[in-house]
Length: 409
Image 1 (tube, rainbow, N blue to C red):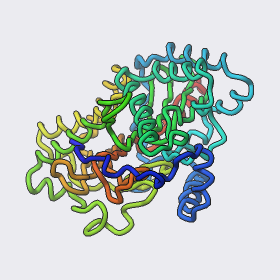
Image 2: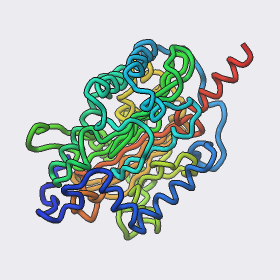
Image 3: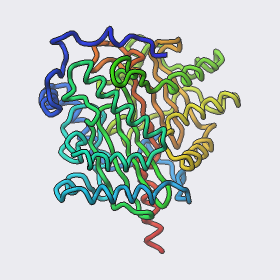
Image 4: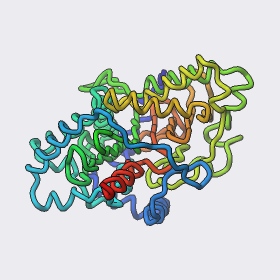
């Protein structure tokens, strides 16, 4: 899989968009371009809205999420967060720490247009503080989830090396924030975001919600140097193709939205510069995304097992007991889960797919080049995201329930 040769699309010397620039210099150049001005203006408009959550019809379904006893590593993570706070200066605390209900939860994005003035930029931290940030993240995630997170950060540096832009694209080109006060009971959490990576992690009474998440890579593997052999998204790609390949002719017809990712029968306006084919990207917290494609009640038992196996790939960052609970929640709505596809289903050709139910939204997209020069989607540039529809992104529905309950205790 992903055998396209990204080295055919490395900018020639003198043609890199970011060679010799710092992240701030790169951002200052881009924010003067009309198309970027338009994207940021739309994001600002969306950010100004009150949160409701992603829905399929514009109305939030109630009663989908419940406070329940789980065994998330709340004590371990809260201790790690308190250790981090003890190392921060007063100005760093003001810059990076927010109330649990702060709108800044929603103020993330996955480009490397570094315009933010809030949060801790990892590349600007001394090693001790940065290690403490990483310890918070490591303590929160499964071993596999933390490894994948770090792999994406390392591949970002690899991309910077490929295009001569390590001042813009680096291993530490990410922003970290804390929300609420670290606790084993009261809601609190953290956020990490930057190029090709966004994690929003909330702890509530032993439960952990990690949503929205964005993970991507350009390219999705390293073939030389320090990170030679590093690869991400192999399973998400392979298992998606295998599921599509298992469908009957009628099932494929139902799942397929368009044969082309860039034109042809692709609905007009479906592809956007900022998000490619993604619908649930940055600032799309309230988007109405109608169900499309093949419904779960039309899948065989074996296909349903394959679908759940694919879903689990996207939740690998959850600790084991939290993963089990989340998968049970998703399986409850399996018959109302929809799977849709855009593009080819042949080996080594680009495609998009979406998995959507009342309690989960997953998107996989092969993307055109941003820092590499391919003008059409290629398998080596991947974007993925996970959302929790109907009001529980950022754990907001469970936070509401927590405070409603404690008010009456």
